[in-house]
Length: 410
Ligand code: C5P
Image 1: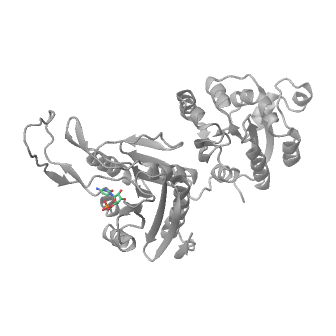
Image 2: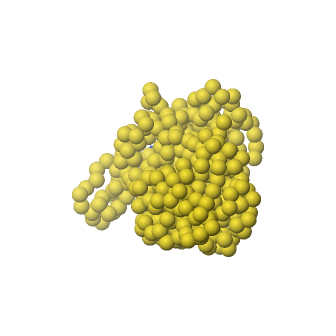
C-alpha cells in the first residue's frame, strides 16, 4: 500500500505556469489513495480552472480567506488542522518570500502559518529569480524551519531560458513525498571540479574541469531522493538545490574532507578532476623571475577514489575516466585497478564533449556489464547516469533482481 494512502493532503497551488503540473499531482495523489484539498492563490486561477481540481479531488477548491460559504463548511483553522501534510506545488518566488516572512495575507499563506503539519514546497520560477539572493535567503530560512524543498529541476523553462527553476515533474514529487525515490534516504558523497595545487601564494597548478558533470550528477541524485554532500573544488557554478556543499581547494583538502565523510556514505561518486601531483616546496613568498630555467619538483597526490574504494567499509564507488584513446580498455583496467563498482568513461581531447563542453557522451562499465550513453547535454546525461547508478547500487546491495542492461545501447 502506498504511504500516501488515507493521508489528508492540502495541495497549495500558486500562480505559475507550472500550475498545470499540479493537476497531474492532484490526480497522482488521489490515485495513491490520499484525500486532497486544493487551495490556490488568486493568481493560480489564471492558469488552471478551479473546476479541473474540483473534478479530480471531489472537493471544492478553496481560494478566498473570507468566503462565507466555504468558511461555513470548514473554516480556515479547521482546514489547517485537517491537513496531515501541506504540499505547495508550484511554489512561486513571491509565495516563498511571503511564508519566509510569516505573512498571512491570503488563504494559502494563512493556512501555512496556522497548520502544524509538515510543509513541502516545490519551487517553480525563472532561473534568475531562483538564483536571486533574496530567493536563496528565503529558501535558507524555510529549510532552517524544517520546510522540505523539492527541487527545482534544471532545464528548459517556459520563458525560453535554460537553467534551474523548473518545477519537478509530478511523478518525481510523488516519489519523494512517498519516500520511495530509488535513492530515498541513501547518503551520497560526490566530488566535483578541479583542484588547485599552490606553487607559491599567487600561483597554482590546475586543470580545465568545469565541475558541470559532477554538479549535474549531484542534482540528479538529490532528485532521486538521495542525501547528497558535494565536495567541490573551485568552480563558477551555483550549488544544486537540496545538496550540501563543502568547498575545498587542494587535493589534500579534498582527500581529508572525503576521508572524514566516506564512512557515512553508501555511495561515493568521484567526478572531480584531482591534480595527480602537487609542488613539493611551496614558498611563503612569490617566486621571483630570476633564473633562465626553473624546475618544479612535484610529488604525487593521494588517489582519493582508490583510497575510498579500498576501505573495509567502502561505499558503492563510481569513478570517472577521461581518456584520449583506447577508451574501453583503459577504463576497464581503471575499474579493476581501483577496485570500483562502476566507471563512466569519456573520450577527451576530440572536437565533441568533454571537460569544458556543455555536452558529453559516456561509456559506463561495471564488472560484467556496460552501457553507452550518446552525446547529450550534461544535465540530461547526469539524470540517465543517476538512474543507472541507482539500479546498479540496488543490484549490488539488495536481493532484488538485477534490472540493469548488460550490453544495451541508448
Ligand atoms: O587515475 P585517474 O586520474 O584517471 O582516475 C580518475 C578517477 O579517479 C576520477 O573518478 C577521479 O575523480 C578519481 N581521482 C581521485 N583522486 C586522485 C585522482 C583521481 O579521486 N588523486
